[in-house]
Image 1 (cartoon, rainbow, N blue to C red):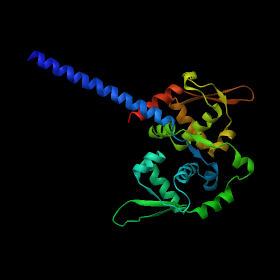
Image 2: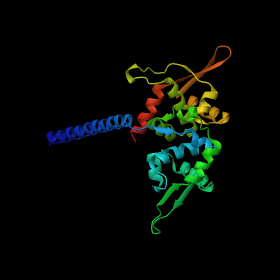
Image 3: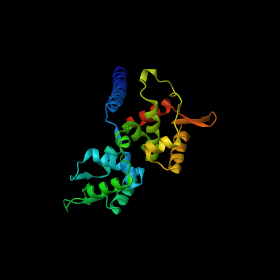
Image 4: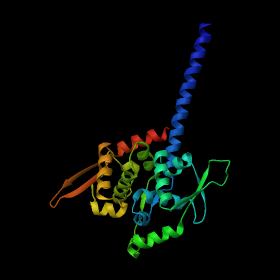
Amino acid sequence: MAMKNQNILMSADQLVHSASHQSQDLQTLKALASLWDEPIVYVQQFSQALGDSVHGFFISIFTELCMPGEWLPLNDAVISELFHLSSKQWRRIKTELTQRRILIQRRPNLKSNLREYTLNDDLLETLIRQNSQLSVVDVGSRPLSLNRLHTKTLLYFGASIKAVLLLAAIQLHLGHQSFGAREQFSPYITLSNADIQALTCLSRTELTNAQKWLSDNNVIEYKYDGFPRVKYFRINYKTLATLSQQVLAL
């Protein structure tokens, strides 16, 4: 009987050990898959047209998913998966854009609560022509690409979309660094407020708040040095990796 109980305990330990390995393997696969995710291409002209970086962020993703004239079914689950937004963020963006007549909604099936959305392309085009910078240099400049895993991670932990944009601007100026060559911190880079605002369309107050959140949560560090004073940024890769791993484990 004692031998039988011992065998049962051994079997239980083996199952726990196996489940632990499977969980680690799944997390590793998620991490590898995230490396192949297409980045979000943030189109500054959308933010300039609407005077709002959050609206520009949303429409940048929407236009990747939906061609002009097409309708896109959206609910909280789709918004979370593809836009990385919470239900509260989605409700606010939806309300603001529908009130501005940029986003149009319909319910194709009266028996279902599912709603479909499309953009008012004519109005959006008019606003782009009126408010956006459309010179050859502006249109042909390198766009701001947002890492999807980092976007999802920061938004999950309560960062604003503005903080996501600021991190992306810093990453853009850092350039590519292989994982093997990375240490806890990236090298320091110089990046002026004017350069950041040109890339992100953030106001000075929005930039200050985004910088504070990233700094308070140890995602970035910044300092001033030299005369005249120059601002330097660096990324805490260890913190960013730790937060990302927690999101991948969900």
